[in-house]
Amino acid sequence: MAGAKGLYTPAILASAMELAAFPWNDAYTSKGTARSRSCGSAIEIGLSLDADGRVAALGLRPHACAVGQAAAAIFAKAALGLDQMRVRDARQALAAWLTNDGAMPDWPGIALLEPARGYPARHGAILLAWDAALDALGG
Image (cartoon, rainbow, N blue to C red; front, side, top):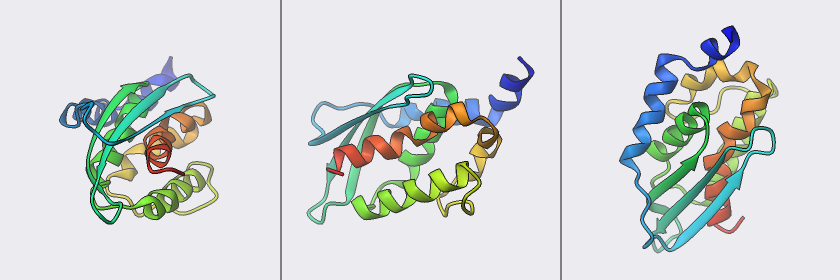
């Protein structure tokens, strides 16, 4: 259990609680889902888009571990104003960083997830919000 203790830091647990600021709303016009093959965590995202296809508002319905929820909160706090290309680029950079194939992505708050890099079984949960957003954005 020592590994889990190192993974579920007080900061990650606190970040997971921040999802309350992004409640689900059935009125969102674009919806997406994602599920982690490695741990079974899942997330649903609802987006409202502006006329240029950028995220104007979002809500999340998580069914994920605390690490996945913390990552989703990090995503949600910085996603407003982003389009499909920016989300896709960020997702690719995050995946590379998690596997030590790239530098830390330029995403506010992402350093909080540093302890989770050593837990490959949690990487899918970390990517959930980006994957669900890409599903909602059509790709």
